Length: 116
View (cartoon, rainbow, N blue to C red):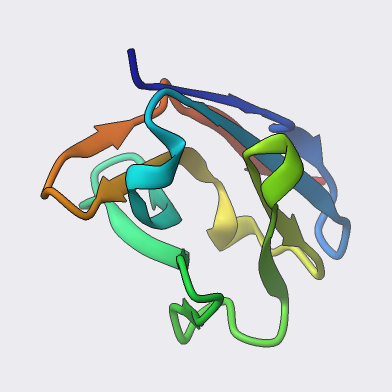
């Protein structure tokens, strides 16, 4: 059974940092790409960052230079290090997994609030 368990959200002041974690389980060898998306109130869900199985990463323009996606293969975990956070980064962040066979899975979401 495929599961994605997220952690690490919370409240942080502008300019602060947070690290999100997403632990994957189930058919690990089938994973093609893992990523983080976010959805702010009244807005569409958008891609924030992704890491492909070979290690290639890509980022939304709005987070380049501030966010870093990485993975620990031994722990089957993907991280999103978020620095220099801004109020506009406030959203529910979702971990996403896409498999080579086309399967797509979502985590339950974790709230990130950037506010003074």
